[in-house]
Image (cartoon, rainbow, N blue to C red; front, side, top):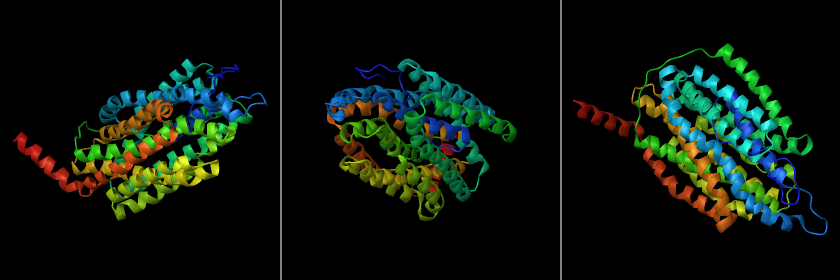
Length: 418
């Protein structure tokens, strides 16, 4: 995206949420996600005549860019949202090995496209293609993890470690993308990621074994409450990713390298949160852990607009990442537990639902966030999404005794069949 008074090739957009996901090639996707948006934002930040304040002159241009950047962000999640319902049943029928490797190939191609794309249309296509690869990788990866770790406590710990891998991708990706763009160029970080993706593909061929499990379907109120928690908790950071860098350039005159560094506290705290509560959540109650996490997400988002410099973002972003780590590690483990209660190995389907929830957050957030920033302003948007999280948090109480609720539902269905 070019500044109206300065023509130059478009940079790269984001990352991701999304996310989490247990295996290396998906971590590469997360690094990619985080790098893309800051590269795009950096491309829009150009030199201005010395007689005018840079922030004030660029303010209108950057405000208009909110929508385009938001749509670019959302394209991956929207495509992933459409593909997930097909990937879940597919893994139930053919296993996890083939979908995971297919995801690696697609992610490799999209990463190469990011490195050499010079127009918004090509970036949009590469970003959408990335969504297809992420769908295959994340659903198959989480399903495989749940099927390997059948003990509920061990699975919770494993999910925490896997989501810690997601956090590592985000942790490295944000500073990596912005610093590499500023000092090396836009292609270099993506070529490095492509090399890492090839290395991971070789590991998959050596380590992963083909598997096949029985198909099945799971429908449960608890599943959808869990999915809602994942969606709304991650929607906060999904909205911040395209809008916060622009708001920083408008109000703080932030240099390019700070646009990625602003997310560093969230990444570090997410890494801590997922690993810590992968163990603690089972002891204190995953429903309580998720409820507290959503409250903290809401409060952190309410505090973001009060920051006047990048240092003022450390507290809110750190709290946001830590809280999302609480929610993600708890909800992913609960999803697998709900499958076990029903005695059906349909982890692919249930984690497809979980990934759909994440994708909804990362699709709705960026796509509507840019327009809402233009309509009501960045502070009001933070208040809106923060209040939504606080109001949704009490619903996590419904997850307090899922075994009893699921047993009644299963018995009722068996009675109807008789």
